[in-house]
Image (cartoon, rainbow, N blue to C red; front, side, top):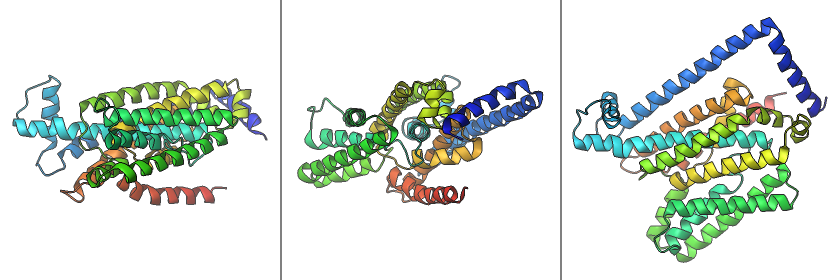
Length: 366
């Protein structure tokens, strides 16, 4: 049976489900399960954020966190001292929330790209966006491009967009197929990585090199509420767009020929979703640096819970990524206190064994 025939059969089965009362009952049970996963995920995320904010040198309780949050949201008066309130609201809370946003965003991007490119190894950095962002940040910090008017985050964002534009140009020139997109991304990644290394080696002093290297490995230190609002806004828009294309992503699972046979405008859809995920990745990298393996491993873990239907998969993946990176960041900033480990190092140490396990299970699947 060809991919097109499988896709058509899947559509017929879906229509038959609506007509069969027994299947309706099953769908009701499935809907309850989805609702339970949603509720459990949101509760776990809220508890994770609240507990993670309490962990650190200053002794803070969960009650203190709720008191500070309620006070700043106008729902009560804080009983905390200005110092403790500042530690919670100005230091730990924005960092923890940005970790949740970055984890959710990277996981969603990985899910979309793996489905869109039909490549289980695809992640947000496969298009070279991370390398482009790194080059943009290094050019601003080391070479002083912009004369101080351009910040590190703005330079990273511009570099990410330039890298993505190069990938789209190369892939279009080479035919625009999924394998050409991936190969173009690899080429762009190597190009911008080489440019970053060249600038650092020829123009950076020891202090600049250390700071740039720490950022390139992923760092959530020094973030503020503006980073949280910008990244969460981009994440919200991306989630809405991707959920609106959930059925289209399901069709891509059977291949682009099958998707076209089902009425999907393959070229336009691919451009819209790739541009959307690239913009989200650029925004996240510009605020938090390059954090790997989240978008590579978390989608596989989420599929084990929900299956491959993207209307269920995308929200669960976002929640799983958010919870995961909240705790990874907490570990990174406390395990070697007072030193801080780059977040990307911790995600790699956790992600590599997890990814090997995923590959092993995939190999055993008939």
